[in-house]
Every structure is written in C-alpha cells, then in structure tokens.
Amino acid sequence: MKRICVIGAVVCCLLAVSVPASAAGLGEVKAKSAILTTEDGQVLFEQNADEALPPASVTKIMTMLLTMEAVDSGKASLDDLVTASAHAAEMGGSQIYLKEGEQMTLDDMLKSIAVASANDAAVAVAEHLGGSEETFVSMMNERAKELGCTGTTFVNPNGLDTDGEETRTTAADLAKISAELLRHEKILEYTSIWMDTVRDGAFGLANTNKMLRLYDGMIGLKTGYTSTAGYCISAVAERDGMRLIAVVLGEPDKESRNSDITAMLNYGFANYAMADILEDGQKLDSVPVELGMQSSVSVQLADDAPILMEKAGAEGLEREIIQENSVQAPVKQGEKLGEVVLRRGEEEIARRDIVAAEDVARKGISAIYRDLLAYLLMKRQAF
Figure 1 (cartoon, rainbow, N blue to C red):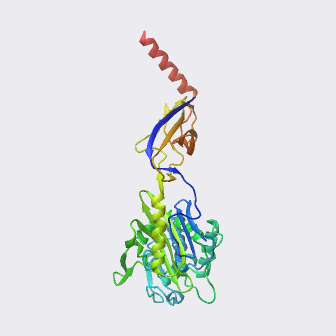
Figure 2 (figure 1 turned 135 degrees about the vertical axis):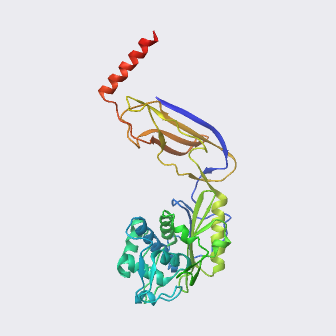
Figure 3 (figure 1 turned 90 degrees about the horizontal axis):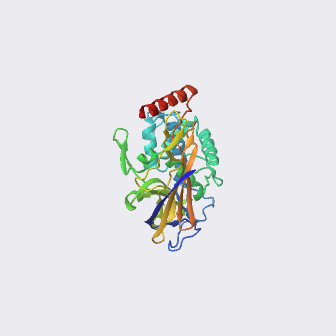
C-alpha cells in the first residue's frame, strides 16, 4: 500500500514550459547568431544558433573550463607557478604583457584571463596544463566533443586567430560550454570581478564585460571582439534563483551586443520562472521499515532541481506525494520509495522519485528472537 498526500492547490504564476525558436516581443536581434538557455540547457530563444562563426575571446571559456577541471580534480593547483614562454609573451591584443620567463600563480593567470581577457596568460596556462599549446588545443577540441558541441573547432586557447587558422563555433555550443563551466562555482569569483590587480598590485585589471555594471544580476562570463568575429559575448545572469545563459556572435558594435543581451535576458526573466518540487518548509515523511535494524528510513528526492515554467497568469499547481506505507529490510540507499507528482488540473507537469536516503540492514535471527522475547515480556507484564 502507498500513502498519497495531495498538497492543496498553491497559487502561482506558472505554466508548462514551451521552447520557442523565436520570441514574440523580444524584438530584432542584430547578432548573426544568438541563443538564450537555462543552466540545464533548455532553449528559450534561438536565432541561427547552429551557424559556425568565429567567437574571438569567448574562446577562453573553454580554456577556463579545462583550468577549473584540472584544479578541481587535483591535477593542478591555483598556487602553481606558471612560467611564460617566449611564445606566450609574444601574444598581441588584450594582454598583461608577460615577459619570457616571468612566473605568476595559476590563480593570477586565471584572473587575468577572466577579467582582462589576457591572450598571453591564456597561452601560458595552456602550455602549463597541456605541456604545449598544441596539446592543450587538442584537449579543448576533445572536451567540446564530449559536451556534444558538433559545430566547434578550436585552433588556439585565446581566440586570437592568425596564420589563416580560425576558431569556429556556434552560439549553441558556447552555451553548452558555458553551462559546464558554471558547474565550477569558483569561476564566478573571477568572472564577477570588476577591477583588481596582479603583480602585487603593480598591474591593474578591468573587466571587459561592462554588462556587470549595466545589467542587474550579471555574473559573467566572457566577452570577445576581433574585426572578423565582430562583438561577441557569453553572458550569465541570475535572478530569483534562476540562471540564464545568453550568447551572441557577430554583433556589429558594442551597443548592439549589450542591447541584444539585455533584451534576451529580460525576455527570459519576464516570461519564465522556477517552480520547486516541494513547497518551502515541506518535508517528506520517513518510511517504516519491517525487520530492519532501525524502525524507519529517511527519504529524499532523487532530483530536487526546480522545474522551469512559463509565467502566464495565476494557476493552481498541485503537488501529490505518493509514498510506500512500509518497506521490508534490507533497504538500499537510492531505492525508490515513492514519487512527487506536480499537476495543474489534469495536466502532469513533472514527476520526481522519492528514494531512501540511507541503507537499512535486515535484522538477523538472533535480533528477531530478542525482539520477540522483549515483546512477550512486555505483554506478560501488562497482565
């Protein structure tokens, strides 16, 4: 038997999400390619999102991703000293003017990449992590394939294309890479910096992403520009617990880039919201365990990530909790013991499993015998 609890209709402003290829009211997007997604990859708007184009310095989100993965896996440390090669020191464009043989911590190198878009620092880090720039670029392309980026080919770690070679990627692919980078929360400590310094305060850094001061909730990630690529950005903003990723490539000028990103993010935040699987403060009941070493097992949602919904007037959203009345030991952590179902009227919006939060071992014969004796003794004393 299962216990069923329907949590009465709660007033909210949510409808099931749909995925538009274009969005009414968004207006003209001047970018050659654009996409707006959630952090988990749901597309809210797209325009030529699969067209392969040069991304300029937005390339560096992959460089930052491989760096964060190396640090978080223990293969590298932010305290590592990175030595600039002659090749890294000769990079043009945005840079921190590294000298051949100069050493800087990986922390400062990463900060220089994220904040000042330093091309020389990107190459120095690539050589440090990959052993050579060429090996690191191979790592970039392999990681892109793993993430399902079908329109991406990297030729360097910084987007400063030369010698007839040109990085090509798509807005859709960059959104995927950006979402993966956001899994490493520490990167936001770098991408949200407005101004800082390296070389013990001797060299100033100013963030190339001016949207940090122009858009409420902006937290990253990376801008880019070359005369070939135009103005590009992968922008991430967060409001009310929802993160959106907006990518534009091939904008004609900074003003268009900023206005398109603003319009896309505004559209997302105005038309979508996140609905929690359970209401605030609501808890799931533990499930009694028969013949277990403990009398009950605590439970949890297998996936408690909020559901993206469309805002569209006040509607009732019901949450139905269906749980087992009891379960026999042994119980394994992760074992399904029920479900939470979200509905609006007769329409099912989402369904999430309720699972055991811990193992519960089965009692042995001796423990069962002791329990029986204790029970009989209790009954005898009752008379």
